[in-house]
Amino acid sequence: MSKVVQEWIRKADSDWRTANLIWGAPEPNYDAVCFHTQQCVEKMMKALLISRQQVPPYTHNLISLDEFLQEVYTEWTAEPEDLQLLTLGATVYRYPGEDATADDAETCLRIAAQLRSLALSLLS
Image (tube, rainbow, N blue to C red):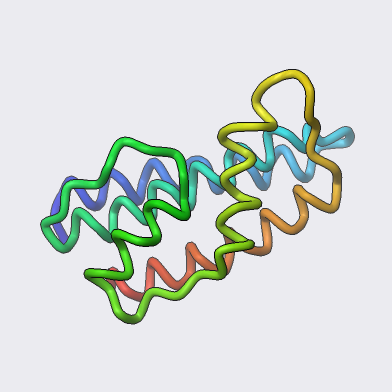
């Protein structure tokens, strides 16, 4: 595995740990949990693309990244609804006007755990 891919995984793992630390706080910031789970999955998806000598597009839209990823990893599977919910963490929940709920945060953690695990298995 290249050093660049390892760096993307390291950054993704940092977001994963941060999301879980925030979730475990006495008063969790649900927006931040959703943001860091999205960031974790985005970085794992980009690590997968880079591992196949693809230049990932500059986007936070996980559905868009999924389209690129499916072209180079037939084993990659993700539900569009799950990717859309995670994408809200990097777009909508970061700004005033919309807030993530505890259910949103818990669901984002579950989805991110599954996709992170899949990405790590594909990279090994």
